[in-house]
Image (cartoon, rainbow, N blue to C red; front, side, top):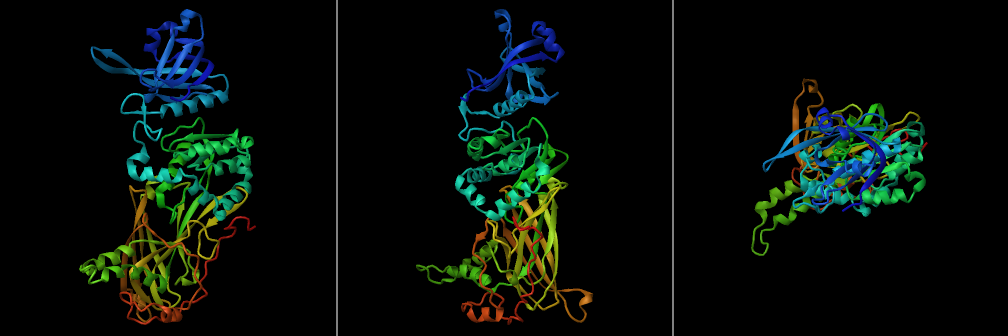
Length: 545
């Protein structure tokens, strides 16, 4: 059992009239000791308030069961603890009324520590047999919003993954990511100096340490995985900064903080910006902890999209299904499954870095404003797409990437994952069509990118792309060809290659393997124009000013 938390020289008093009338001698105690710990018999978390008076008075103690207790702040050093009161009648325990106890601490520092101790002990829920702790240590007694919408198995794997130092190292060594965050914080010291900061999903605690370096008055680092222990160790190893950082283990949906935040900082971005659904937790933290008008780092995010043509990639994906074209695999004909296997490979988004000259038209983007959007807006994201082809070619799908803005008071800093920019651990993402489109220069490409969230902390992607009529009579509209795809964002194909040397498409055809993928009978038109490039946003990479 964990060591108890003790607070000396507190005062407490009954607020509920019924309790005060029942025990007038305990209605107010000027000097007492507050003790958070486990019940001796069951180990259940309790708050004990014990009078420091004479021996007779010393017997006056209140025992508060934290499982159903709530704490409300009345002032800088004053708290109101409300809990259920019960009475046993016969063999049945009945809940009669709520008991309210006002507790007053000596200093604001003790007041904050008292509340944090309350939160930590409240979440030490016991499972099954009394006194037997859960295997993963700390959970909450009732399901919060995260638990109700996310599968337990997915959450367990997610927190296990981010609880390992090797994965934290992978993110820390992404110097575009880490360097941009550092620059965004340090260039906007005025947003952090003397302010209260909440680090949402703190991980190793690096962003909390950045905020402390920028002069934050106090930083609350909220982390739900076992990485919280490592973060505490790292922060304690930097005492000049760590004295202003409090690590809180738990989900932002369940923890309580002793004060509101002036600024939130987080790294909630996943593949395609929204994978892992941490943006929802970021928005929930805003609603729960941020003062009106407070800042969020990052502030907004944008999903960028453009059609692309990559014959090499298409044939590589199609080749994966060739195994299922065998007619005699140990005497078994595998071809009945070839079609399903072919579609299965094309249901995987491809994560890699590619040459921006593979894009068929200038990109468009969809903006998510983290400061104003609702959590529910992330459950389903519907993006109409419209492009005009710059060249005549085969369109193999839709390429996507994202960027985020740190809208500081002094400097606006962008973090981009665009093709052609320094590669990050997010790379870029491409959704491939099993049936490519054929377009001519000037032809309009329309469609829809539809993302639907699911309980495995990811999204199902529904992509529709159509080539519209072009040339004479095009103004009358009409669709010449449509191709659709259903992809699972949680199960991508991690190609993770660096951008390959750009090859004109005439040369690509000469070098391709003999396999002709489905629908490839029509000859390729003119090669891609090398003029299509992605212009990084100003200050998009760290230390470029």
